[in-house]
Length: 577
Ligand SMILES: Cc1ncc(COP(=O)(O)OP(=O)(O)O)c(N)n1
Ligand SMILES: Cc1ncsc1CCOP(=O)(O)O
Ligand SMILES: [Mg+2]
Image (cartoon, rainbow, N blue to C red; front, side):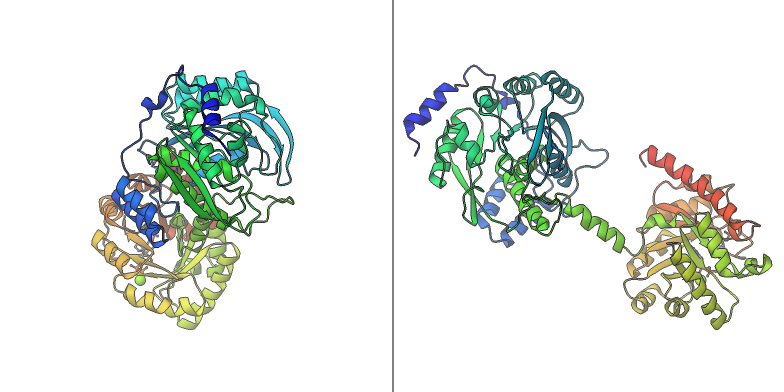
């Protein structure tokens, strides 16, 4: 057991009086939008943790919603991006250190810069080698990052030499770093030593007094208090008090090394102790949990949370990550990595499951039976050539054909399009679309109402709707459509007596449409650039008939149009639109 005398002794040995107190530079940002905080409170309360919820309510803040899919992502254009600097070692296995920090920050919507202190040869089995980065070069990395980026929080991990610790402390002081989270990494999850006890003195004397938070696990807490045994919660409390005497604003002693299933972390701020409980997850994939927790706390602080909400949110994120890591099979060793970016995989799944990726509207080929007849082509030959030339979606538009002939053609075209990985829609005819298992339909204003078509086709099929006005586009959206075809932009021989809306009409539809828009009518390689440039928002592509299908070489004509569209989109992307 620790005695008051030993606490005082260690505190005296590592007196912090001579150091500049950087805490006065700690500037945490204003609370996030109430909606996010309310969501978080609701989620926490529903999870049966009223104490934490109450605390958050008192704080009136925290954008600390742990699930990145539910949070407003702060990595937005036109806003100051929250920024963390991780000063840590690289893990070649990708599970801990710098790699964990970057993934955790990314998952929480925070930009992560790095200064790499050591390169480890490491995997799920253990640490096979350590190569320390020369101290001067670590210093150079710190200078590069701190002189350029607006860093909100510095988080340190593996600091393998005393000089390295001093260099980091100097940088934190010189650049008036706003907040510092110190994870006093000593031993990897595998039990391999990463940092020797020689750095302890300098760590306690130089870095901890500058820290807003230090996050030792039980062996590290024990090392920080001179090797005293820490084996239960009262010991953890005492250790936290001793470490607090070394100067950090908060101490979080993590209890994962105790065997209980109810993991208790102790947070001490010099006045109050908080017991933070979490359930142990039954998983071997725990490599990098310490780094992940510390960098997640840093990320939450960077977003503006106060310390306790930041820690609660980080713990929440970690426990969700652990749940999503249970079935991960990576590496042959006993400790697998975490699935930090589980939310991204969900996002990818969601994108794959989306009825329509609006980017597929980029070059929308609409077939024409008259033209195919004139050029002696079958519909499926025409579809194949267009898709091979770069068409990103196809619509079969047969105005004259009998149902049976239309269906036979449609079946052949669906087969070709699907072989080549492109969706095929049917113009006007739901019955044909259903019979040939097309990907959906395109409907006009006088065709079947969209809500009826949606009810018939179900949730998986794509529905496009022709609209000349923003009001029509809004109606289509309400009724369950997926995209808007807007035109005719220019007059065309392909659809006679069709009122044109011009570039300004197209602009109005794009501006007022909640759905992605594709322009149609009189579009060719000669005017596609001006059309796309005139509507930089919401116009995802062009739908064309004659400039592809009334041509001697459909493939070449499509490829030519494709390259023109790509040129505009690439420029717009480079300009940040
Ligand atoms: C992509 C796309 N946009 C608009 C139309 C026109 O459809 P509609 O108004 O139903 O006229 P018809 O094509 O049926 O004559 C379209 N087909 N495709
Ligand atoms: C179907 C349709 N809807 C509005 S204009 C049009 C025809 C477009 O054909 P083209 O690309 O040959 O001008
Ligand atoms: Mg129609």
